[in-house]
Length: 369
Ligand code: ADP
Image (cartoon, rainbow, N blue to C red):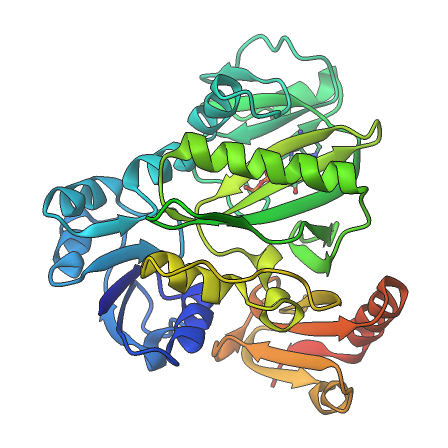
């Protein structure tokens, strides 16, 4: 089958890597010729935000999907009209692209998410300090999100369409990956705990299973299923949640695609998020998602102060560990904060897993030559 992906980044690369054990032809579209998918797929250089480029790219494909949500949705609607299968469906990508629509969707479907106010620009805020401002569009990896703590901070308020939310007192940041195929099967992965790097605001570690009660796990699974019912689309989605210090669960946001919080499923679960995504695209029976034990992931992120051809210092030492799996994304140049790869660790206990992740973090450095 001819499968097309908008975006040629690491998520697409790992999907294709996994799926090459089946018989398909993979096509990718990305504006950078150094894109991680370049070497392993039939690659088109072009802008996935451009209507005509996406429309042309879709021709002759049986399924078109995404590995990034900032794509031209109008072209996806047009491809769907031509009878090409688009997964996930364009309406849900369009909704997720805009934080305001996303929040209104949660509210309309009874999915718990922090209360919010929509603003068009600098306006009177009704939500008490401290609050969070999130730009309606254009936010990514923590950009376009800021916390305002007092009257004095108000001058920092961005004069753009945004949502305002109360600052949640977060105990844990969690994620659940859920998939649905055209046959209507829905399957979730075990809930993952995400630990962030406070400076870069990037996901740093994942740990799975999470240290949450079976009740909270069940509640999150129910939220994921409710989301899928309401979304009315096949696809694989990552729902990011907060568990607050009162024990309440809130949906923060959803990504309509493969997600960093699912990387440890590569070796940690019976099947990975990439295998599941493949099965969704081909409308195959969904895969078993159970965890094999404890697993975790550490992002390999470009260190501050280093730009240029990448070197992974300490990689050999890390590879001497028996329970460690290294995944590099084929990016030649590093820069501060750039996601260059990740390391998965499997373990018999949560304690051993965390200890090892912390050790590896000090052992390996992403620097430039
Ligand atoms: P992005 O789309 O850039 O990932 P998020 O909405 O996930 O943005 O916000 C980034 C981070 O900011 C979250 O992972 C969380 O740590 C923090 N954050 C976002 N919203 C809130 C909130 N309402 N209360 C507390 N922290 C928040």
